[in-house]
Image 1 (cartoon, rainbow, N blue to C red):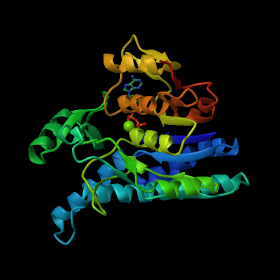
Image 2: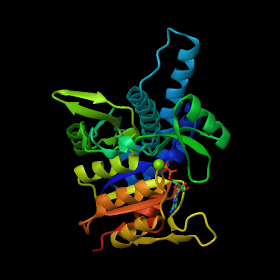
Image 3: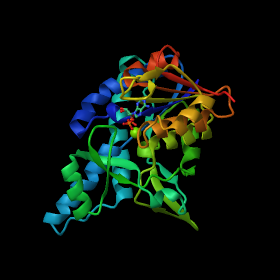
Image 4: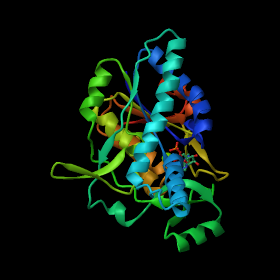
Length: 311
Ligand code: ADP
Ligand code: MG
């Protein structure tokens, strides 16, 4: 099967050194899938990383006037670069250790968004560090940041999260996949760009990696979209004493649960929407939301939440 695997924040950790160590574990389930004969295309988030790069340049430029502030799209490109580097480096080693072909490449990927996307009026995507309520209030006053609470884990800055419309480098991705490469692409959801004549302009926003992964999976005609994250199942009444984990979720039920507000925006909601967009109207396609460590069992439908088409 052709499988798009979307890696969440827990696959990468919080610092470059932590990430370098952590990806050695992350690539094992990916190598398992490749060893089972699947074509694997890897995508990943970049929330903490892009926030860290942005804050670093911001802080540095305050104390040294020779250092520029780094525009947000450039921060995204940087994060794709070093995350891709770590992943392709670690996966290559893992494949070589198993006497397999070590062909892995990451692509700096631009993803087109629409200027008129309503998301630009309503920022939702958490990026960067977690703050206390008090720190959050200070930051929104002094920096004009929009701060929101993120799934009971603290406050984070949020930026607009427009929907991906097109993947600029899609033909190159298809060619690499067709020639047997494991491709790492649309990192952090891709660098958001708007098109004007022959030019693409980066915009300060973060495309949700789940939506970008869904678009990618559709465009390359994948059989499965597997979203690996920090929870083993999608749940109803998540985080309450009445929590119910779901092993199977039809597109019909998913739409109803979405409306009932079971899935938090910025975390589980985009995953469900991504799964729906990929699976809808196609009985052969399935999406799976599962924990990172259980990727192989999840693709064999032994664990995780399986999302399947039902009218
Ligand atoms: P990732 O980096 O993998 O995209 P996110 O933090 O964006 O991770 O999304 C995963 C988180 O979604 C979980 O850690 C959990 O706290 C949260 N979450 C919100 N609603 C639900 C739900 N209904 N079921 C399961 N997890 C949920
Ligand atoms: Mg997320």
